[in-house]
Length: 368
Ligand code: PEP
Ligand code: MN
Image (cartoon, rainbow, N blue to C red; front, side, top):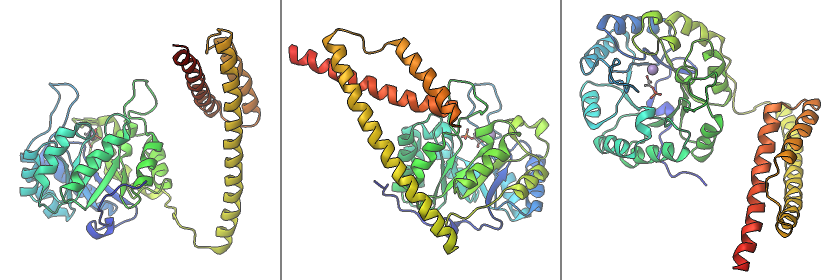
């Protein structure tokens, strides 16, 4: 299934001066001097195609800096006039849209905390009717692909065809190395459903700290994402928001120099042949895995029927522990990571439990 989005190619609305596409700028516009000086330093690197800055900041807790407000739009105008960089800001309601458009902002984006709310997205979409402006939609805070798709559909239905998605990671209850878990699988699912939709990665908000940014930025390019949005501040140590994750323009420039851009298409015939041969091997192995999985489930069903007839619980913790233990050490010996093996086993185990529950309940219904 593919999504029915009407999209104009990125190259038709974004002048990409340097590959890969980079949208850079401070998390927040703080003062006129900070914004304009940062913009100049970013422009001087020659590596950014767009200047970003938050004017209205959605803060999790009240009492924190909530953005400088409309006055920041004037500063952005000045930064653009002096550097030639087109500008991008986050909008979270109809008033923001109107003010940003009136101030000549070139690109609007919808933040993660707005994408979660269909009312908000619809309000923004309504304000965009009849307007020809590029819009980028960040993924929602929670790992819900439908909300992300829904927001893109609402904006697209308002007539916005210069559309892009921004992958900024998803919050999770567990503490991990990332501020927001990347969940690459969700971004890949969206790319698969809408291959023509440009996808921009935001390593700053995924990482939450400077150290991990190069790793995520490179991975995004390796996943064939079309560009990067990275927060940059002339002096991150005194930034009013997201201080830990912002890069100085010179660190940003270094980062861009060290990224490797790979091509999604293979041109060389010999490489193509070799890849086709290896892919055929993968296809064969995948078919074998699926068929073995089906075989396993048939045995699981038989066990389910035995458990039912002998009044045994579906879950037997000891047995599950034993499986997990034995298989992971075997897998480790075969150089498979424990994390991967555990996830795979857990997935199979869930499905087995689901099947056995079905068998148990089926009888209950039949007996009733
Ligand atoms: C931002 O870009 O500064 C921002 C608030 O991002 P997000 O919506 O991804 O949290
Ligand atoms: Mn930020």
